[in-house]
Image (cartoon, rainbow, N blue to C red; front, side, top):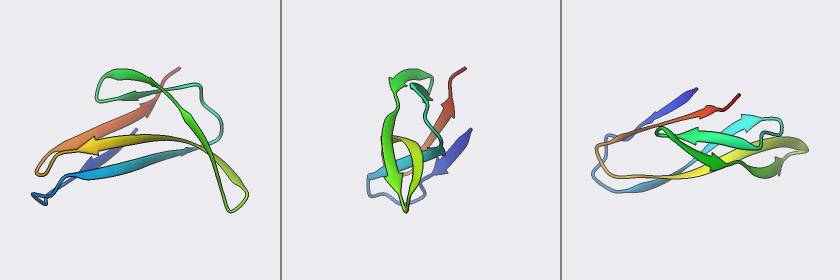
Length: 63
């Protein structure tokens, strides 16, 4: 599980990354499909998470 604490007032898009291939991630308690991405030859599963200013987001791998 990883958290993003956004202290700024400006909204952000957070790219949460987990190494390896995962079909599903949980974003703020909601099941979303994992997006495959290769960075420098390493395979990741990512979720693009909009985070409003002053808020926190949580992403974790679903079993």
